[in-house]
Length: 370
Ligand SMILES: O=c1[nH]cnc2c1ncn2[C@@H]1O[C@H](CO)[C@@H](O)[C@H]1O
Ligand SMILES: [Zn+2]
Image: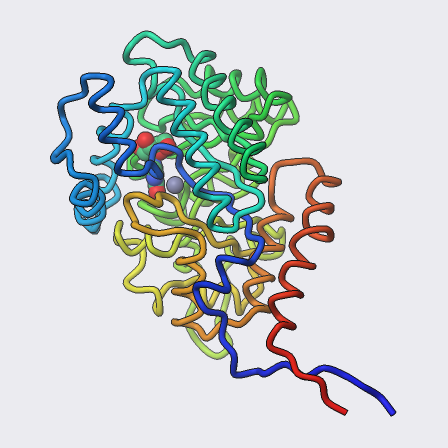
């Protein structure tokens, strides 16, 4: 006689369930995730007068509404307010600490959070002071809330400071900075503009991701990978332009390369709809890319501007594509495999935290069968 367990297969993960799952987040901007109430506090403390409103609820709604512009360039305009209140070490440490808290409360167990140090020197902080203040917040928040948060330092692609920022990434790599990135408006600012920084990082055996294939298409993705040597792609959603629809779909050379090399795609569904990179969640290329075996990960991009969380991004995918626990675990393991921390640390989180956590949720709805 054998005794097994049968899953109730009709049970879809709910938002509450998803919040309990141990999740991994690779693409989240520190200056895109502030609590509205914190923005109001910091503006008052630091004499920042540019806020459109000082009521936290209306401010949160304002960010979300302004971000639905359909263009990346306009989407990026609201960051002047978050960056505007992040100009002191106290403000940076507080924002980083609260970020760790908010992510941990959403069930994230490992996160890589990015920001551009060069945007936080307007009131006299040095790049090193900025980095140290943020690392302090992540470390404290990590200890208090039981989450591991690594920092990615970003260079703004329209500026010319990428080499300095790359050097900063290397200088602080043993103190909590796990990698480098470039962000900002993509059209007109190709990755090769910063080739010297990427070549330097490669010589230093350092890790980096590149925002590519969001506000611009295939040439940007191609440069990011084949000229610059990116480990991962921020968004990469426009890789879909190199896939011919059909049954089966036909992959062009670049799409096949990205899939076959297992290059991780840091996909951010809600953000892509706001910037016009995708039409709706149901039509988002993430569904097809997953079916085709690309190494897809799910991310938030900017929790404030998108009014979202990692759990909510997953819940939207469950609704649009009918995903169950197996798919959510697959996205999560993909993300952990693609993280910039060491291989033993990744394995430990996958085997010691992620798999047991998902197993518990998955089997909760199971009933014994004879
Ligand atoms: O989705 C995005 N695409 C490109 N750039 C972005 C995105 N979200 C935020 N930033 C830019 O990255 C800077 C550092 O965090 C932000 O200040 C914003 O200008
Ligand atoms: Zn981003």
